[in-house]
Length: 308
Image (cartoon, rainbow, N blue to C red; front, side, top):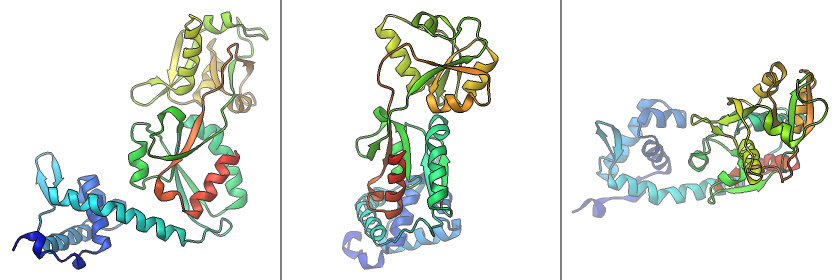
């Protein structure tokens, strides 16, 4: 009798399927155990029991790491949609009371967003839900979908054009952008013309290990390119919070969100100038996975973000 004929599906429990899914995702029993919050031996025991039930090795050690068998991959694929649906049903029965909740939410964002939107979000969270914590992690636009699918984060805030179509999302209001320069700048004396904007060297915001321009810098460059103009980026840094400090000590100028500029002007001797370029500012989205659609806690946090 073949394995398919002998397999008793009543011996396969939901917990074992979830463990197998994590092991296949991570290609590591240890990492899968860490994600589930159990010990490595406990995870190994679950996989061993599932091997006995299915009669399949499930995970095979190879020189480049652990790899699932074709049967394990098929089992994870088949059970994945079912497990996601069960999570959604369970979430809908949860009761979320902001005033008494001690829940933690994981939000992915670059520090550009953390410094402007998340700071105001936390003010509202502290007023309405003092026991709720927000964990802000670094955003990698290359794996937003995978991170949210795995449940490693609840939300991400990302530039609109980087959001995968398979995710749910809502637009945030465009961020008004301005130019900042030190108060005694040798070229700028209370006004900022387009000629000065492209003639003075810039400090700019870069993103990720590729050091590519962030969306606000791409936006600025595209506007200038449409006019046949370019600018010199003398400094490129990965932190938007560093830009006001750099500007205050040099002859460089920078493009930043207006609320960050106003806050920085209370600390540094800098002036704020309207941009001499006209175009709607870049837009960001709050995005989440389908599993969070019916979650009362996620609905509450999404509502706060939209109000910002």
